[in-house]
Image 1 (tube, rainbow over the protein chains, first blue to last red):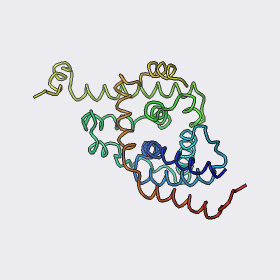
Image 2 (image 1 turned 30 degrees about the vertical axis):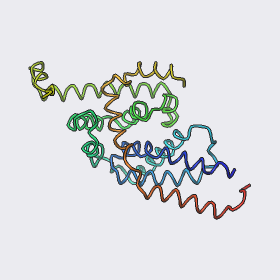
Image 3 (image 1 turned 90 degrees about the horizontal axis):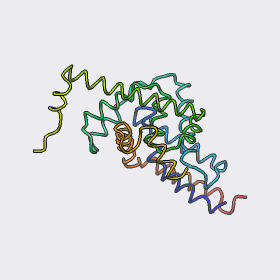
Image 4 (image 1 turned 45 degrees about the vertical axis):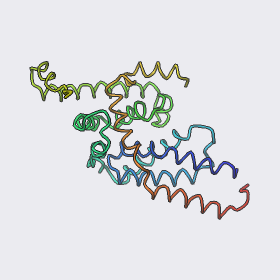
Length: 184
Length: 61
């Protein structure tokens, strides 16, 4: 019993970065996300006896966080739409291989997805869960999870394409040529 | 889930390493994930741990 404690704490710690990223994607704000993670850590700690070491702690924590998020939303009513542009803002610090504008467009497209689809594509595409795990976290059937991810991807493709064509007008080919970065 | 089924799944859902959408998702997510964990969260864990050790100096059960 005692020997499990350090490991529970360590595993919890190692999951925090991903848990935070999921919290930001759900709440759209860093401050709220950190409060949410804090509540989740306290809840998880209080019910750690119900967690079996060796099973999937990440999925267990994501489930707690997600439940906490939706129960807080129900209590407070929907005030979630005022995103602080958390993802975009961070990209200015960590531009990675993509341009800042590029990911800004992507984040806005992501914001336009229905909550269940956005959550699904993030759990599968970014958090690294299997469909089975993601379905369990969201308390839905595996088939439902698959169809949410698929619809999310289709919708994102549509949105991103529409944005591109809208910007470039009908002469998309020559426009694309001019947008290729030059290696000077 | 083994590696093979993981690969198969990635290829099927169009979110794998060659997918633009998949890569952008991971870039956004990874940016937050790469941030330093706020100290208040680390402190909270330490406090929870300390309180528990204090209240249960010997074996709990």
